Length: 316
Length: 293
Image 1 (cartoon, helix red, strand yellow):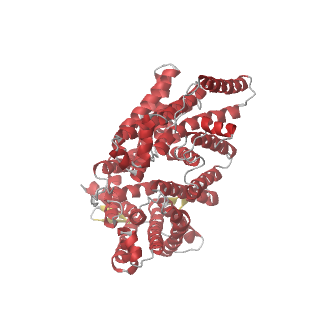
Image 2: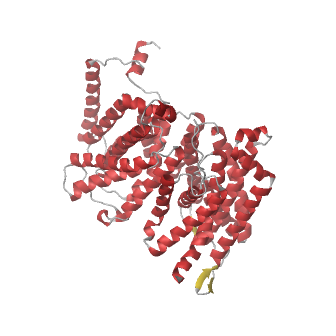
Image 3: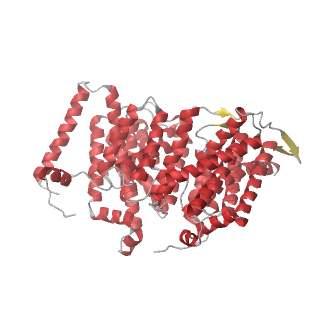
């Protein structure tokens, strides 16, 4: 891929688009044109986008199948809620703290487990996610299985929007940097990457820590919107939800993850009255996508400026 | 000491159940290198088939177990044919994700058709009695579980060691391509492996029903994961390893919940898994084969 210098006008235009999108929805919320129902789903959508994009960095770009993403979300949620409710920190500090705490958890878990390959790693991360949940259930400081309730509702549309944009900027720029190329080379062929002098462990841990950190951010936003967090929320099923989004979107496509997160959130909202059917559909999506389109909706393609240019310009 | 031995006795039957489930994991992994996530749920289906054969058909426990094993053997063959065979030559991550999908499909189809509530395993099929032997209290259900599990393991050993199918299974797991050249039908052998593994899981499912007294559509998840830990502990792909691993996990778990905090019971077996993966990923009985480039 040739690197073109991005024009300032383009950046300005895109920033303007984001500002317009943000203000439109903000206007809808403040004038109560968007009802409570839509606001809740909008919140889930933003949180799901952050989760899916961060997991896609680990599963899609680095090729390390992690099944413990909900565990990092839990770490972030608990860290942030403790900081705001028990230690009286401002919300911004709590968000940063949540991301740092989850990133640290990712580091502690990642360094030993990322030596494992493929399915062993999947099981190890699944086990660690469950261990995080069981440990939280046994800590009295956070009320054990009952969880923490009465959390102030600090998550606003502005924070959510900021969170999504920040996640996308960090992940997209990381993937397109020299670090990103190293990360992708690990996915494509770990042994060959190692022979080329890439410190594969370093890049795997890097991707894992960043992914975990954003999962923590998502957890913090989640906790401060839905009033209550309990260990049970962050079980294996939650990790599975996020995995469905990443697989559906395409392993190795950020835009795919975003589209799939939006689609799955809408599907979940529409099937709210029939939870079993929702899960049966999820399962079928996983199986059918894997058999007939293992690369997911977007494959490893991105919907980007180039794609737009191609459509506009009419060239290949 | 008395109490310790009592705990060991309690742990043996639980360990036998884990060992039976672990055998299916290990056989499938040995032959197609796939962690069959749906295996725990096949066990759940087995438990429900057993339950309905007792309540609807009035079968006794032995017949119920046989029916469950037959039904699940078929289910195993179907799962392999529909979900795993098309993916045999794709990446292992792809088949793993499919296996997770199959697992959830089985769980939620069961919830959809039977309902999410747990069912009480009929006491008429198995009246629980306690015997007092040398100061130890031994329940007849523990004896039943242990004896039938060991019997099934002996049958399995016989099949694998002395029959043509068993020989084919060992050949395919050793080298699939060479097995094809020797005239072994790989598809048939893999089907057979799934059938046998799933039948063992179904037997374990009926035993879980007798052992815990209740069954529900999500009962397969945690025992499935623990049995997987057992398979990894013994060295995945190695049949005697799975048996030993199952007993070790069962005993460990009963001892932890007997002496310590039962809330940590689930964390302990996962902790064992992490330790094994970090210290000796090939398991207790595994040989280090090195990495081919």
